[in-house]
Length: 162
Image 1 (cartoon, rainbow, N blue to C red):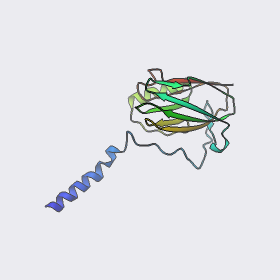
Image 2 (cartoon, rainbow, N blue to C red):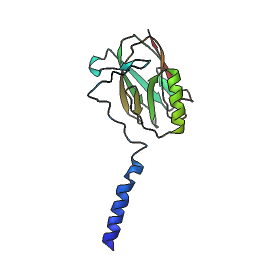
Image 3 (spheres, rainbow, N blue to C red):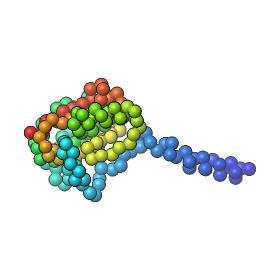
Image 4 (cartoon, rainbow, N blue to C red):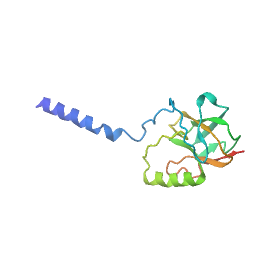
């Protein structure tokens, strides 16, 4: 009888592992071998070996980024060092305001959705993550935390590319 119980417990544990696979799970490593050439309205993934500028961006539980506004030269390959000084998870997602608003709405409907794009950093409390991005077009772009409630609370920054 004890053997049957042991097998049942082992089976239950092996089947339940998927339940814990989401949530605070770390996202895939940004250390990719291949740099994506996909062009977005706000640029493309940058080569970490060709970074021309490093910008530190702090995230806080006050639902703010520091700095709130950045000026970037068109063509620059920027390493964003996104540091979460808070006690809850935050993220930094670069995009146009329209894209960020649309993504924020999707996140409200699917708050546990996993996504890993080169223009995103998902940062656990007390940790830091990097985004390496090349701004290929002039214009106004933004970065935001799209965790439900954070964007609506004003966790948005502006990037001016000249």
